[in-house]
Length: 179
Length: 334
Image (cartoon, rainbow over all chains, first blue to last red; front, side, top):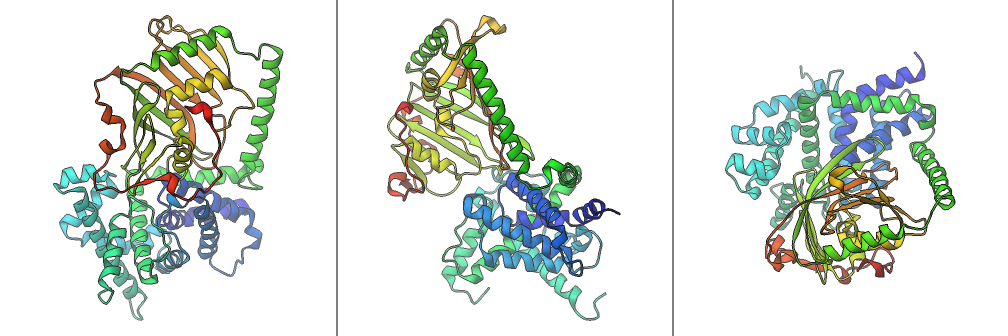
């Protein structure tokens, strides 16, 4: 296999992880796509600097972090809260998923599916409307018979419940003797 | 989280609930709040990636294919910005050729075309409110998309532009004849007596739409002075269009090309198309089209910002804010 073929395998393997990591920092979807492309192109250019004894994912996130911070200094309004502390935490959370068994990001993230299935109905429905059907907050308010503020609260509580559940499962999975 | 101070907890909850609506300054936030916000942002991103795969699995492979296409094409590999540089040089050469050909042929504007633009400007300055559909086509080196909005104009100096944003929020920009103002999805309403200040404020928004291109009067005034104009033949309802190419010395933030079509009897603008030949890694307007829809009945208060937000929203004057760039003079805009 030549370098391009190897690189393509790495890109396919890490694409979901990388776009999720970038999306967690960037609120503008177009910007997230641009930063994804730019991160991969920088990685390709610097492939000879990559230490093959180390995992590829943290190296890739390191490039993305530098690009994210550079873009944030230029155009802060297109980001969620952006700070080294936030990026450190995002990096640690992503690394925790990376350590899970499985070849693909979605396999490693089976905890998310399990936690979603366990969410109480009102929260699960809010997540479905927002993230699967991509409804705006006003449309969700109409369907759920809530105010827009109520929709925001429900979504946030759903995210908190999901996080607690995922964190618990990831810790369980890392515990000695875990299946 | 239970041992947090109440105020810190409330601060986190407020920020977390507003996650999709606003950008938050991290300055001054305690580490514990930042870490909690990071978890919220992370779960939000996990759900978005999962949702994308459920709705459109091809988008993932398209993303990877785009990387590999750029890696495979030698001229795009050396540097991510290389393609932009190549296009910039290409554009420069093209512009130089166009300039030369225009100088050789007939660089000065056709007097008839200038007169027609002046006639349109006079017609548009009457007091009747008019509504236009607006389509903004954004393009980066990677993707294209478009936004739609509505523009209401009255006379030469009043307008209101309402535009849906990608996350379902709305951005409203306007001018009441004295001040230009903006109502972002979240955060204070801003206003300024200087349209250039509002212009700079819009540059920080997810969608950069300059108030200069939303004022039909400003665009027509610019056409008459800063563009080489000529009539173009249009078979559409016997209407003739005026096409303007921006002169090299004119401000670069205005479109490279403007095509305007008016009603032959009244001079009222029916369509206004603005085009930019730039290339950018980030999405920027490439083409903006205004299409006349109808005349409407509106009270004059429609053009004030107060009609477009809750009374409780704070309103700040951009004149009171520290300027991030040196203000430019732009006397022709009014």
